[in-house]
Image (cartoon, rainbow, N blue to C red):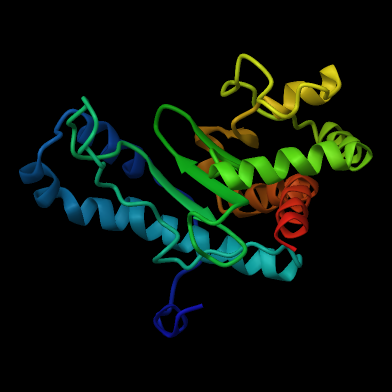
Length: 236
Protein backbone atom coordinates (compact mmCIF):
# COMPACT_ATOMS: atom_id res chain seq x y z
CA UNK A 1 0.00 0.00 0.00
CA UNK A 2 1.36 3.42 -0.91
CA UNK A 3 2.11 5.99 1.82
CA UNK A 4 -0.21 8.42 0.05
CA UNK A 5 -3.13 5.99 0.21
CA UNK A 6 -2.46 5.42 3.93
CA UNK A 7 -2.47 9.11 4.80
CA UNK A 8 -5.65 10.18 2.98
CA UNK A 9 -8.75 9.75 5.19
CA UNK A 10 -11.58 8.11 3.32
CA UNK A 11 -15.25 7.85 4.18
CA UNK A 12 -16.83 4.38 4.25
CA UNK A 13 -18.59 3.20 1.12
CA UNK A 14 -22.27 4.12 1.33
CA UNK A 15 -23.44 3.01 -2.10
CA UNK A 16 -23.66 4.57 -5.53
CA UNK A 17 -26.35 7.22 -5.62
CA UNK A 18 -28.83 7.74 -8.48
CA UNK A 19 -26.64 10.67 -9.53
CA UNK A 20 -23.88 8.18 -10.36
CA UNK A 21 -25.91 6.47 -13.06
CA UNK A 22 -27.36 9.79 -14.22
CA UNK A 23 -23.82 11.01 -14.86
CA UNK A 24 -23.06 8.06 -17.12
CA UNK A 25 -26.32 8.42 -19.02
CA UNK A 26 -25.56 12.10 -19.61
CA UNK A 27 -21.99 11.28 -20.61
CA UNK A 28 -23.27 8.77 -23.15
CA UNK A 29 -25.13 11.62 -24.85
CA UNK A 30 -22.28 14.12 -24.51
CA UNK A 31 -19.10 12.41 -25.65
CA UNK A 32 -16.87 15.46 -25.89
CA UNK A 33 -14.08 16.98 -23.81
CA UNK A 34 -15.87 20.27 -23.19
CA UNK A 35 -18.87 18.59 -21.58
CA UNK A 36 -16.71 16.29 -19.48
CA UNK A 37 -14.54 19.16 -18.26
CA UNK A 38 -17.63 21.07 -17.17
CA UNK A 39 -19.09 17.99 -15.44
CA UNK A 40 -15.92 16.54 -13.96
CA UNK A 41 -16.97 17.52 -10.42
CA UNK A 42 -20.00 15.24 -10.85
CA UNK A 43 -17.71 12.40 -11.91
CA UNK A 44 -15.42 12.93 -8.92
CA UNK A 45 -18.27 13.14 -6.40
CA UNK A 46 -20.66 10.49 -7.63
CA UNK A 47 -18.43 7.98 -9.44
CA UNK A 48 -14.73 8.11 -8.71
CA UNK A 49 -15.03 8.95 -5.01
CA UNK A 50 -17.52 6.18 -4.17
CA UNK A 51 -15.56 3.66 -6.23
CA UNK A 52 -12.37 4.53 -4.35
CA UNK A 53 -14.18 4.05 -1.06
CA UNK A 54 -15.57 0.74 -2.32
CA UNK A 55 -12.11 -0.51 -3.27
CA UNK A 56 -10.71 0.55 0.10
CA UNK A 57 -13.48 -1.16 2.08
CA UNK A 58 -13.37 -4.32 -0.02
CA UNK A 59 -9.59 -4.51 0.39
CA UNK A 60 -9.96 -4.12 4.15
CA UNK A 61 -12.55 -6.90 4.36
CA UNK A 62 -10.50 -9.17 2.12
CA UNK A 63 -7.55 -8.76 4.45
CA UNK A 64 -9.71 -9.65 7.46
CA UNK A 65 -10.98 -12.72 5.59
CA UNK A 66 -7.39 -13.66 4.66
CA UNK A 67 -8.18 -13.55 0.97
CA UNK A 68 -5.01 -12.58 -0.96
CA UNK A 69 -6.44 -9.76 -3.08
CA UNK A 70 -5.85 -6.05 -2.75
CA UNK A 71 -6.44 -2.78 -4.57
CA UNK A 72 -5.04 0.67 -3.90
CA UNK A 73 -7.98 3.14 -3.99
CA UNK A 74 -6.10 5.22 -6.56
CA UNK A 75 -4.29 2.71 -8.73
CA UNK A 76 -6.97 0.00 -8.82
CA UNK A 77 -9.42 2.12 -10.82
CA UNK A 78 -9.46 1.98 -14.60
CA UNK A 79 -9.36 5.30 -16.42
CA UNK A 80 -12.59 6.76 -17.74
CA UNK A 81 -10.74 7.80 -20.90
CA UNK A 82 -10.99 5.20 -23.65
CA UNK A 83 -7.98 4.07 -25.68
CA UNK A 84 -9.19 4.95 -29.17
CA UNK A 85 -5.90 4.61 -31.05
CA UNK A 86 -6.82 1.35 -32.76
CA UNK A 87 -10.59 1.47 -32.41
CA UNK A 88 -13.24 2.43 -34.94
CA UNK A 89 -15.29 3.72 -32.01
CA UNK A 90 -13.82 7.16 -31.36
CA UNK A 91 -15.93 8.08 -28.33
CA UNK A 92 -13.40 9.42 -25.81
CA UNK A 93 -15.02 8.22 -22.56
CA UNK A 94 -16.16 5.00 -20.94
CA UNK A 95 -19.79 4.97 -19.81
CA UNK A 96 -19.05 2.72 -16.84
CA UNK A 97 -16.63 2.62 -13.91
CA UNK A 98 -14.42 -0.33 -13.03
CA UNK A 99 -11.62 -1.46 -10.77
CA UNK A 100 -9.43 -4.52 -10.34
CA UNK A 101 -7.94 -6.09 -7.21
CA UNK A 102 -5.09 -8.60 -7.45
CA UNK A 103 -2.51 -10.33 -5.26
CA UNK A 104 0.05 -7.54 -5.67
CA UNK A 105 -2.32 -4.65 -6.32
CA UNK A 106 -1.32 -4.33 -9.97
CA UNK A 107 -4.41 -4.24 -12.18
CA UNK A 108 -2.99 -6.49 -14.89
CA UNK A 109 -1.52 -9.23 -12.68
CA UNK A 110 -2.93 -12.73 -13.32
CA UNK A 111 -5.88 -13.61 -11.13
CA UNK A 112 -8.22 -10.70 -10.56
CA UNK A 113 -11.31 -9.56 -8.68
CA UNK A 114 -13.06 -7.15 -11.05
CA UNK A 115 -15.79 -4.63 -10.19
CA UNK A 116 -17.93 -3.17 -12.98
CA UNK A 117 -20.46 -0.39 -12.28
CA UNK A 118 -22.68 0.40 -15.26
CA UNK A 119 -26.18 1.86 -15.72
CA UNK A 120 -26.87 -0.88 -18.29
CA UNK A 121 -25.78 -3.70 -15.97
CA UNK A 122 -23.26 -4.00 -13.14
CA UNK A 123 -21.39 -7.12 -12.06
CA UNK A 124 -18.46 -8.48 -10.08
CA UNK A 125 -16.18 -11.11 -11.61
CA UNK A 126 -13.11 -13.10 -10.64
CA UNK A 127 -10.59 -15.30 -12.39
CA UNK A 128 -8.19 -14.99 -15.29
CA UNK A 129 -9.46 -12.71 -18.04
CA UNK A 130 -7.67 -12.98 -21.41
CA UNK A 131 -4.37 -13.96 -19.78
CA UNK A 132 -1.11 -13.64 -21.69
CA UNK A 133 -0.31 -16.74 -23.83
CA UNK A 134 2.36 -18.10 -21.41
CA UNK A 135 -0.06 -17.74 -18.50
CA UNK A 136 -2.90 -19.42 -20.35
CA UNK A 137 -0.59 -22.24 -21.47
CA UNK A 138 0.55 -22.82 -17.88
CA UNK A 139 -3.06 -23.01 -16.70
CA UNK A 140 -3.98 -25.48 -19.44
CA UNK A 141 -0.96 -27.60 -18.59
CA UNK A 142 -1.94 -27.49 -14.92
CA UNK A 143 -5.41 -28.68 -15.87
CA UNK A 144 -4.04 -31.70 -17.71
CA UNK A 145 -1.54 -32.46 -14.95
CA UNK A 146 -4.13 -32.19 -12.14
CA UNK A 147 -7.53 -33.30 -13.46
CA UNK A 148 -8.64 -34.42 -9.99
CA UNK A 149 -7.67 -31.04 -8.57
CA UNK A 150 -9.67 -29.32 -11.26
CA UNK A 151 -12.64 -31.53 -10.46
CA UNK A 152 -12.56 -30.19 -6.89
CA UNK A 153 -12.53 -26.64 -8.25
CA UNK A 154 -15.58 -27.31 -10.41
CA UNK A 155 -17.41 -28.87 -7.46
CA UNK A 156 -16.63 -25.89 -5.23
CA UNK A 157 -17.86 -23.48 -7.91
CA UNK A 158 -21.00 -25.54 -8.42
CA UNK A 159 -21.79 -25.40 -4.70
CA UNK A 160 -21.45 -21.61 -4.88
CA UNK A 161 -23.77 -21.52 -7.92
CA UNK A 162 -20.91 -20.41 -10.16
CA UNK A 163 -19.64 -21.68 -13.49
CA UNK A 164 -16.98 -20.56 -15.93
CA UNK A 165 -18.16 -18.12 -18.56
CA UNK A 166 -18.04 -19.71 -21.99
CA UNK A 167 -18.55 -16.77 -24.34
CA UNK A 168 -14.86 -16.56 -25.31
CA UNK A 169 -13.65 -19.93 -26.56
CA UNK A 170 -11.68 -21.57 -29.33
CA UNK A 171 -13.44 -23.66 -31.95
CA UNK A 172 -10.89 -26.47 -31.62
CA UNK A 173 -8.67 -27.78 -28.87
CA UNK A 174 -5.26 -26.05 -29.17
CA UNK A 175 -2.24 -27.97 -30.41
CA UNK A 176 -0.68 -30.19 -27.78
CA UNK A 177 -3.95 -30.90 -25.97
CA UNK A 178 -5.66 -33.15 -28.53
CA UNK A 179 -5.64 -36.13 -26.14
CA UNK A 180 -7.55 -34.34 -23.37
CA UNK A 181 -10.87 -35.83 -22.32
CA UNK A 182 -13.97 -34.16 -23.80
CA UNK A 183 -14.82 -32.60 -20.44
CA UNK A 184 -11.37 -31.09 -19.95
CA UNK A 185 -11.21 -30.09 -23.61
CA UNK A 186 -14.13 -27.69 -23.11
CA UNK A 187 -12.18 -25.87 -20.40
CA UNK A 188 -8.91 -25.97 -22.35
CA UNK A 189 -10.61 -24.22 -25.27
CA UNK A 190 -11.57 -21.25 -23.08
CA UNK A 191 -9.57 -18.06 -23.62
CA UNK A 192 -10.59 -16.77 -20.18
CA UNK A 193 -11.33 -18.57 -16.93
CA UNK A 194 -13.82 -16.26 -15.24
CA UNK A 195 -16.87 -16.49 -12.99
CA UNK A 196 -19.22 -13.59 -12.30
CA UNK A 197 -22.34 -12.46 -10.50
CA UNK A 198 -24.70 -9.79 -11.70
CA UNK A 199 -25.40 -6.79 -9.48
CA UNK A 200 -28.76 -5.05 -9.49
CA UNK A 201 -29.32 -1.30 -9.24
CA UNK A 202 -30.39 -1.90 -5.64
CA UNK A 203 -27.23 -3.90 -4.91
CA UNK A 204 -24.85 -1.14 -5.95
CA UNK A 205 -26.79 1.50 -4.01
CA UNK A 206 -26.15 -0.16 -0.63
CA UNK A 207 -23.11 -0.45 1.67
CA UNK A 208 -23.70 -4.23 1.63
CA UNK A 209 -22.18 -4.25 -1.88
CA UNK A 210 -18.86 -4.64 -0.07
CA UNK A 211 -20.02 -7.95 1.41
CA UNK A 212 -21.32 -9.18 -1.95
CA UNK A 213 -17.97 -8.53 -3.61
CA UNK A 214 -16.05 -10.21 -0.79
CA UNK A 215 -18.41 -13.20 -1.04
CA UNK A 216 -17.60 -13.61 -4.74
CA UNK A 217 -13.89 -13.44 -3.93
CA UNK A 218 -14.32 -16.15 -1.30
CA UNK A 219 -16.42 -18.37 -3.56
CA UNK A 220 -13.99 -18.01 -6.48
CA UNK A 221 -10.85 -18.65 -4.41
CA UNK A 222 -10.57 -22.31 -5.55
CA UNK A 223 -10.41 -21.12 -9.15
CA UNK A 224 -7.88 -18.40 -8.36
CA UNK A 225 -5.75 -20.79 -6.32
CA UNK A 226 -5.74 -23.36 -9.12
CA UNK A 227 -4.49 -20.80 -11.62
CA UNK A 228 -1.88 -19.35 -9.26
CA UNK A 229 -0.63 -22.83 -8.35
CA UNK A 230 -0.33 -23.74 -12.03
CA UNK A 231 1.75 -20.64 -12.70
CA UNK A 232 4.05 -21.30 -9.75
CA UNK A 233 4.44 -24.96 -10.72
CA UNK A 234 5.44 -24.13 -14.28
CA UNK A 235 7.74 -21.27 -13.28
CA UNK A 236 9.36 -23.43 -10.62
